[in-house]
Length: 157
Image (tube, rainbow, N blue to C red; front, side):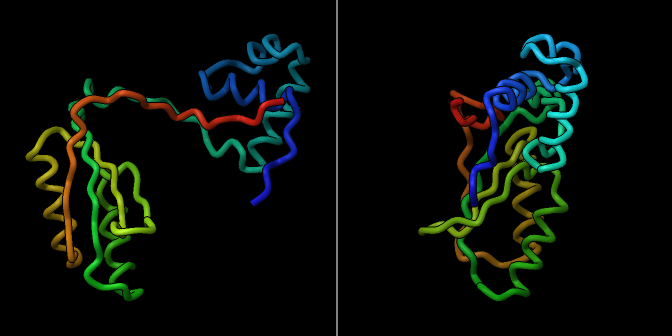
């Protein structure tokens, strides 16, 4: 996959949006010294190219009663398409699963959960184990969050 052809202005705009996507076009344009129309066109182009996937609000999980982060490591019991389809469908139905990865190495899948507490984790693990069989299923509770960012490293221009 090739890196898109971004110029320094695009990188500045992306940095500002990653920091706070609620900024108005006028604020962004003023910050990067562009006209409002030119800034709007660049943002639209970044959206249309898929570089900007969407704009969201980042919520405080602790304040919403979902302050326990759990990483679930799974080893599959079956590697058929049918098994994976059932597993993927189950995962997609569970709102507590924030991230879902297929891995290379000893662990087949990694899930990041945001749950209320151990009982919340237990509910999610039961949903998963009812959906498909696993060779190994283990969870690791985050004791302390040391870094959490949604900002993607940008090319230096």
